[in-house]
Amino acid sequence: MRILISGASGFLGQALTRALLESGHQAVALVRREPRGDEVEWDPEQPLDPAKLHVSDAVVHLAGKNIAGRWTEKFKREVLESRVHGTRTLATAAAESYRQTGRPRVFVSASGIGYGDRGDELLTEDSSFGKGFLSEVSRQWEAATAPASDAGMRVVCLRIGVVLGREGGALKQMLPAFRLGLGGRVGSGRQYWSWIALDDVIGVMLFALQNEKLRGPVNAVAPSPVTNQEFVRALGKALHRPTIFPVPAFVVRALFGEMGQELLLNSMRLGPTKLQAAGYRFRYSRLQEALRAALA
Image 1 (cartoon, rainbow, N blue to C red):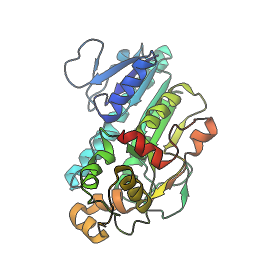
Image 2: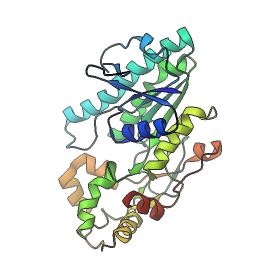
Image 3: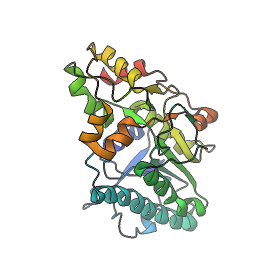
């Protein structure tokens, strides 16, 4: 397959590109600079020529502004627009290309786990979006894929949990403090964190590209979500470090504001219902195994 990838230079994009090439596929990066080789130039804020997609079998859309930062109104607007505008631009071009040539046949887009603060409720793809900024971003992000689905393309929106990989994501940010023995639970520690190993995120993307059963929103999380307290203990054990320095909720809110509440304190216990029904086999279904692999 020839797969067009936005966000190919990012944490997930680089890992996906490696996996595609190792599997004998062709990975083509969408870039905002002058293209090199078989790269395809685009501007998320401008219409994309559908002819640039005619020879691609699939699109994987991963581009978007990093949500880590102080959530000022300006910052939040940039996060939202980077996802919604880019998704709509790419989905519109893909839809027109599909009408003209029947290609690309599938559109896979990253999305967020926008279920809000839901305690220990088990959340499936049929659960409603919650309240808050990330929930609204996820809702609009997925809605922006509508041009592709309306054209008859198979569209998959991967609601990706906390990704465990050494080179990026949440784990990379946590490791310095935990390696110094300064880690501890966040807030009460009872809030659920729905995680997934990097290898499985990439495995899910490859599965979504080729499995015709999969479409619509898909929870891209491991089948064993854990509380923050359980996560912290497992990470400390994997690093052979104590985890005795809790961070109170009021400190999280004071330091990180709205971002701290939504990313660290909100509780979302997700189940990978559609993936399991479609037959996806997780490489890492238990946290301790995933952490050992990520830290090896």
